[in-house]
Amino acid sequence: MPMPPEAFMDQIYQGRLDKEIFDSFNSLGNTSKIDGIIQEYLEMLQEYDPRSIEAAGRIPEDMLERMKKSGFFGLSIPKEYGGLGFNGWEYLKTIEEMVRQDISVVLASIGHLSIGVKGILLFGSDFQKQKYLVPAASGEMIFSYALTEPRIGSDAQHIETRAELSSDGSYYLLNGQKTYITNANYAGGLTVFAQMDPRQPGFMGAFIVETSWDGVKIGRDMPKMGLKASSTAAIQFKDVRVPVENLLGKPGEGFKIAMTILNYGRLGLGAASLGMMKQSLDDMLKRSTTRIQFGAPIRTFPLVQEKMVRAKVYSLVVSAINDFITGILEKDPFANVAIETSHCKLFGTTRAWDVLYDALQVAGGSGYLASHPYEKRMRDFRVATVFEGTTEIHSIYPPLFAIRKLSQEVSDLRTNRAMELLLLTDRLLRQMEWPLNFDHPILSKAARFARKNASTLRRMLWASLVLHGRKIPGKEFILRRITTLSLYTLGILAILAKFSADGKHGTLDEGEIVLLEYFLEEAKAVRKLNRSIFNTPQENIHQRVFDNMVKKWDASR
Image (tube, rainbow, N blue to C red):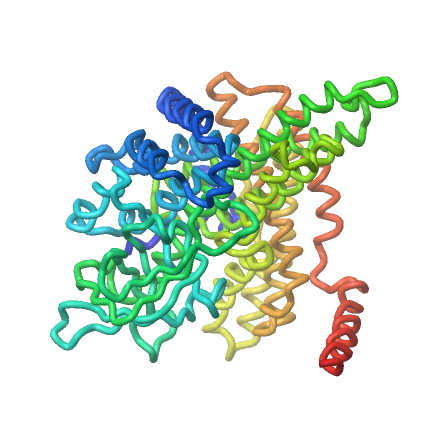
């Protein structure tokens, strides 16, 4: 597997802004290709009512066939394999627009392309691509991504499914169980992850498995809160013979492959979040204009306006982050963007959930009725905060990832305290490399603030490593604060990268600069609350409250 160069946010944590990556921002694509697909989706939803599909709990067979013929399952698959060949920006824009109409139906396509077949696209051999991408593009073989297990969710390195090489070396014997698998009962193919050496947890393989093979058993679809047109089920593997030529990459690369694929899945969630926010904003504008209270449209009231302003601002932030990361991956599909996509997923899904709530609130009592779209959207979208890693995992993952790298940097100096302190002093006092200059006062102000945040992040990461060492994984309040500052830093830098590119193309929108100014004020308030490496008094008291609560609960059982 190619070794990716140093990531953008990794460098930010070290006090360096990579101007080459910053300047690579590109949100250009062929919208005419997108328009045709969206129009086809709209026509289908007029013919097949999403409420009826939800009641049936499955996409009708004739609609599924129509989706296949229209290219829904080949959007991002290269034309040479029968796909439509959408680039990253075009694919995410399609997700964004489709989700505005209904996410439950289109999830079959999103799950198939964003993660199901992505491993073959990125890591497949010529033989694997020819054999599986062609039927995948046509929808003849819909794919699922099978990683999660009944006892293993976010701790993917410790999955329990096993793949054992046969004595003659011709196949792997696959045994285990997966759960919550999207597209399970639509799928003809699976990307399955399994341990390959019981002595080395995390030494995993990624396997292409056909659902028609002996030993593959797919359970019934699970009843869900939302996304009822989507198939979600458990899958069992009992002595499944997987030909050695169906191993993706090399033995032991499965975990890296899984994490690389999830980068794309998280981008897909970012696009879905953006679609939800844009549709909710349109609904709020319409409803607040026609709903009259106290003799005036409710859009004249500041507390209602605030909800719409936030939706507009957050839409800009998520759009900029999505486009920024997509540009990096278009240049290098294996780029190390784990932190960036983690931020994309965390910010997009949490803010979209808030905006969905606000849209229902602006609708008033009618928003609670099932005859309006709000409740279905909320039910359908709620799982996005769990998909591809929970909100809680993404709230602590980026600094853990960064601190792990820092600890490796000083590991060779642990026996020499003086050298260790010298290295720490050098990293903390090293001059920031921040080649960002803008003539516009707001953009210049935002660049300076991002620089200040980057400096704080560097200090907090190193100080946390020194103070807590191996205990840092348990310091989740501190980790969450670091993540929060990091997230706002990326958001501001992504917007600045967008504006910089817009300025070069002569398309810079002064109205959007006001949105950045608003977000910058929010970032300042967030900074004040999150720049300490010590627990707050409330966080310290929390442990006592929890201990007392659990003690009483345990005693009552």
